[in-house]
Image (cartoon, rainbow, N blue to C red; front, side):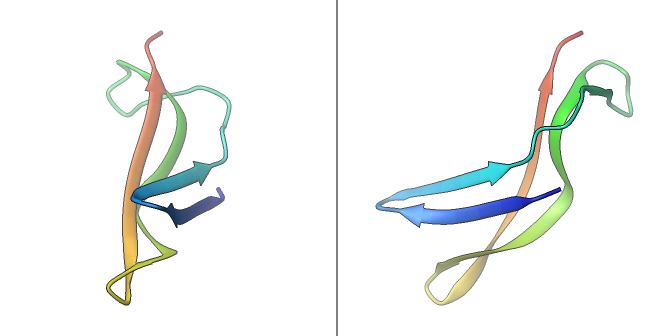
Length: 60
């Protein structure tokens, strides 16, 4: 899993690799991208790294 984050103007831009749809733990959705928890990125705000937790999914 590759997660990249950068700040462009007043926006946080996050890029994450897509993966084949996989059932979520509950089985209600299919996960297509996830950080699987919080990830510290290289993006900085006030000299501190931005932490991102991301789940992207589709409905079956």
